[in-house]
Length: 408
Ligand SMILES: Cc1cc2nc3c(=O)[nH]c(=O)nc-3n(C[C@H](O)[C@H](O)[C@H](O)COP(=O)(O)OP(=O)(O)OC[C@H]3O[C@@H](n4cnc5c(N)ncnc54)[C@H](O)[C@@H]3O)c2cc1C
Image (cartoon, rainbow, N blue to C red):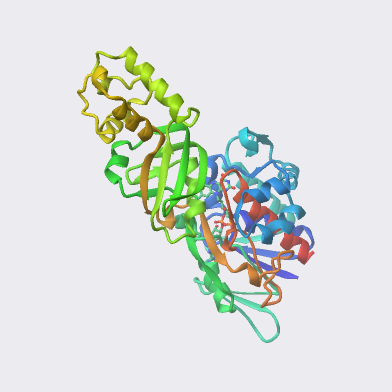
């Protein structure tokens, strides 16, 4: 079979090598001057290739369409990814949280490994080949046209063009247009795993760059708690970011985004009463100081002026003059440092795209279109997304394997 793979990113490269290893004639068309541009920036340049966990634990980390992806994950679980990459010659290291990285800590080694595997299997890689249309003629053959005016013909097409986040890497949503031209539905793409912009922009700006460890972020929609996440976060010029916030973004991007507040518990290890006792202890220690100078043991330096202001206790109040009512208000603020959500950051800044090809029209075992024979969709172009930790790349690998198996 002649197979054209559109997109030389994570899913396209692995699918190409695996399909060619099964004896097919594979050409991968990549619009950039090199393959794997997004892979290069993954995991802060280290590429978190997968998460070394069981398929059932894996599926807990899939936010959208976990059921649809289940068969692919069981068919090619993280351990198979590790085995395959190691067989291709890439040494791997498992880190905290089961995150798997190349031992060299270089994402470029992942790209080199996959490119080498493609070369070895006889894949033809065409660079600077931006596909502009895909059609099927009356003989059942696919006709693929590139912007440069080249025409390709094949028996099967695998669309591996990614989502729409970080478009400079090449993922600009072209796969959605190809899918639509065959009558497929596309679920509106939304940002996921992205910073959150807040209404209290000035406060965020004042705290820009401050990173907080071991906080609990509680998310409220219309005053009702809908989600809670413990971990690390940071402040940006427009709002909040960091691991906890990226996870929250994946949870709230399907809501109408109205009336959402993120309330940060700065001291989640202490109950309100325990924190009150702790503050009382500090106030005893610094009883003759001004309020603004009494919080150094409790909070990072950058946060103190903000908390002092929001507590509404005048900053120069002598600590021994602070009433218990004022202190209780301060404690409440420390347990509920609240930001109102303005919006998610733009999709171009999102780590992944939520939304994409409607999975109802895709066979979950083969990733073949239910509408067009021998047309396949893999990776982020599909309406499937997961949390951080190597899960999104594993979706790319598992779907790539499923297609190779289907074609094999
Ligand atoms: C900053 C950042 C860090 C990330 N870190 C991690 C991580 O550590 N671990 C993890 O699991 N996930 C991570 N991700 C997510 C992960 O990179 C993606 O989910 C994954 O790359 C998706 O693979 P894909 O093959 O579907 O798409 P991509 O890797 O985006 O590949 C799509 C390819 O198709 C090409 N293409 C698009 N349109 C056309 C066209 N018309 N013609 C020809 N070629 C075309 C593009 O140029 C691109 O090369 C990260 C994402 C970002 C943005």
